[in-house]
Image (cartoon, rainbow, N blue to C red; front, side):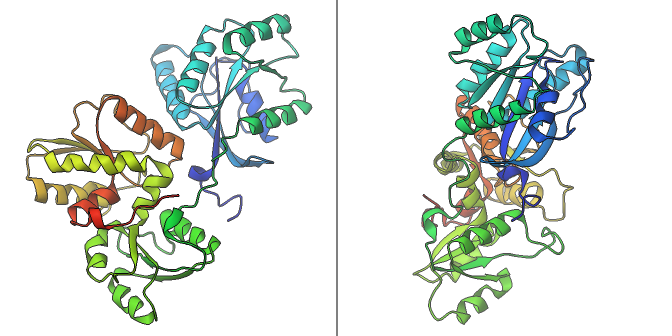
Length: 399
């Protein structure tokens, strides 16, 4: 997969956070080597977060996030700060920019990121115009427990210093795991069941299918693909049963009915439950369905913000299956894209999509919030397996 084709969800997210006019946009331009962000002496030039994808040597494919100042004011300013908080939840490495002024807000953001388990790089910007930079650096170091990187966006050599500092903060496990985990090993035969219905994009496969296929090819597996109606015909072509069958969760029941005893069975959604979220919490949370009250309130969350299609899984199929199973008194809220309620306490269960369009950090932030508010959270594939009566029989991806 080329640099340009690397999905944003697979890139290392590096966010820059600071006050208005603290030099965040200038640092983004320094890091990218391009005029990615508009730079102005007018505070509040950056409004919505600006995402710039590129590759940085040693870090691989990245996306830099230039955010609005967290000291923005007024009604519109509050909306901009809310977008900055959303960007913070997606961030794998945070650069908190100090500008030599008051540091209380910056230090609060450093604490927030550390509590969230996000590596933080404190940066003291505008070295070329800063007067008492040594005093400012000492003050920041005493507060955060490490020396800030003192830089100037006008000095090209500082780009390498920033890169080295970011490299030191790169999470060791970032991007190194296999999507299929221990379910498939080198040389296995794997059958992919991929319905090409109205929801499938014309002329291409959806991202989970593409990434699963690539993962299996990297393992030198022999991969056979079929639509649901050709599933049994594909099995008949094989001299021996496939070691693994990966299916669209919507046809779990059909695939299970004809599954060879020797074959393992999982789904694309379950692979992403581990790759993007907290598989153990998702697996435990599905048991909430066993004691779901008749008037339960359920939240269905989709990462995609696409236009609803006929027989859409999240907006049509899943709600219909839940009402058929539990009665028409249950109610469901459906959110998409970055929309996600701050107050989750009114929900008996959260059901999330596979989140192939989100990075793992963002999904785990949602999981953490659900845990904090003691609300069970699972994903589409797990619920569909449970509704099909085969949840205890399918195989979960593990390292």
